[in-house]
Image (cartoon, rainbow, N blue to C red; front, side, top):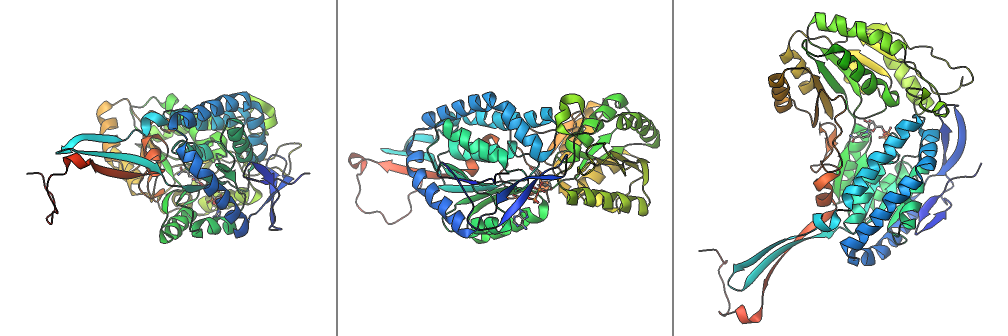
Length: 499
Ligand code: NAD
């Protein structure tokens, strides 16, 4: 078993801190390798390489940077098999789902190929006599990102593709649970033509994160992960004077109106509630049928679908619906929450407890669960479970359902299933959540729109990818220019105004 490394200045570099974390295979429960955990000296080395590389990189014209992105896209495609296998082996998600993880990141890279257009500035000819005014977007310098375990390909690409396209260098601190794909991405980016030091990967835990947050030469920090850490990173990063955007946890509701096609709604709940073992920030974890009749019919349709779900290791290919959860600790947390749901009075309609799989007794598998009669005061409603557990909260009216989603502390995604255009339109306008699906259960915007929740699902203002990413990774400089022949008067002591 060979230990993983960092990726610094174009080289695989062994860790020097002496600290490591085990990288597990969640399907077997076995340690498959170790990842080094960086200290502040290693972070500083990365920053110095990133600084040295950034000067020339920012002076490379945007079209040449875009060509490197194009080559990177084609390398992602030709290496898809290896990336997908490594991703599933460390994360546990199915191979087709792992391919989707890579693909949704790749689409952001494709968007970033438009950098020459997106970075074009603004120009006003003759803003005054002989005066021109122009604004340009300039890179920040050394930027950094801290990413979660659940999308080890997509989320790093959401960050580093726009950062690099804008002319920054980028230091990625991926999740220590599944670091192999981020390391592979950095190598592919260099194979595509990115100069050494422009994209580096430093593995680590809180110690590395704190070193990033307090390093004076890192200009910005992007974070995706759980809400408590998002809040911590936002606060600490801002205190250090950095530009920070942090995306946190979620509890996504799906409102099912009495006029909805209930078979469609049930299918949508199965995919969005149990896909990737519920380990998606846009997973639907709360079904909200309106009216008891809708609820009874929906539950009736859900039960056989859930009982037929196939849970297994990624090696089963597309024969399984979802795999294990990421760690033994995650499995235990989910089981504790299920117990709390029962103790607090929810009805466990499909009981996934005690799920085992022959030959994978030590894997971190959790069977699918369905709760009915969940109420707002229960822990399974308030907490992000991040597992294959769907809670049903019955409501009497549309307004009750709308209020439920609006009042929850998280506001990442939400969906409504209905055939009524007026209801759908009213819902989209009034709900207090950042991403809304109308008969779409997981409304993750495409690369050329932006991704971001509201309330406790986000700290900061700009969203990820789309035009917001080009704002986050650049700062605006505005030049007012007059050539000597246009200067008529002598010294001026009052502020110039447009008369
Ligand atoms: P996490 O918060 O445990 O870890 C995220 C990152 O923070 C990792 O790189 C980790 O090493 C680092 N980290 C962990 N503890 C830290 C600490 N005490 N101090 C500093 N850094 C620390 O999240 P996770 O378990 O990897 O990912 C799952 C979470 O991410 C879920 O809550 C999910 O909803 C959220 N998520 C949100 C989005 C979004 O866009 N809103 C997308 C994906 C995942």
